[in-house]
Image 1 (cartoon, helix red, strand yellow):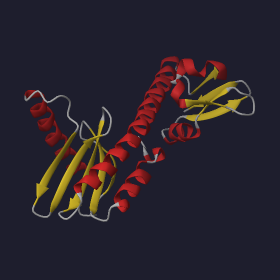
Image 2 (cartoon, helix red, strand yellow; image 1 turned 45 degrees about the horizontal axis):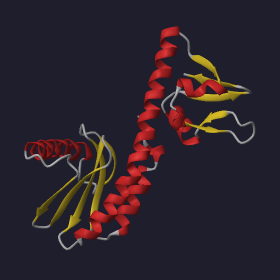
Image 3 (cartoon, helix red, strand yellow; image 1 turned 60 degrees about the vertical axis):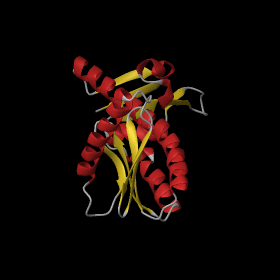
Image 4 (cartoon, one colour; image 1 turned 135 degrees about the vertical axis):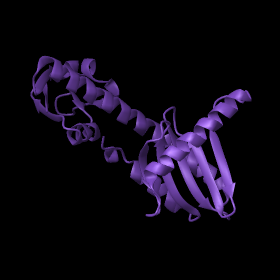
Length: 200
């Protein structure tokens, strides 16, 4: 699914350009799937994501085995720089590559701030994907390509976190960024008075 509408790229750009010594940044799921990244052209984001997942799996098992609580962060030092990994909520990690002369304290501070911003965005995306799956399932079950729901009952179909009040009539509507995400994933949304219409 297209995740560009959830501003990951903007977050990564702000992080990368806030500290000149940062060379690459990426957001990766715990399962090793790339969400967003700013990497040198010669770096394969899929390969790096898979390696990151394997590395973090070992780190999490080691932390658990040594009874150090939940995994939070990891850094690896090479001759020419650092690789830094921080948990960005329960389902993703922020990966950062830096030069050797970077000020680690500053990097960790900026990375933690970025992780705090990633978590709610990722949560919104996950809820949106679940809503799309639910609507698609209902359409398939009923063998139709469109469905309607009264706007006042919209929160019974999808999470209230995906909804806001329309200032013109005070009825619920889907948040604009979420609506765009739906449409990018082949679920069109229209409003007809008190109705919300979904089309495939």
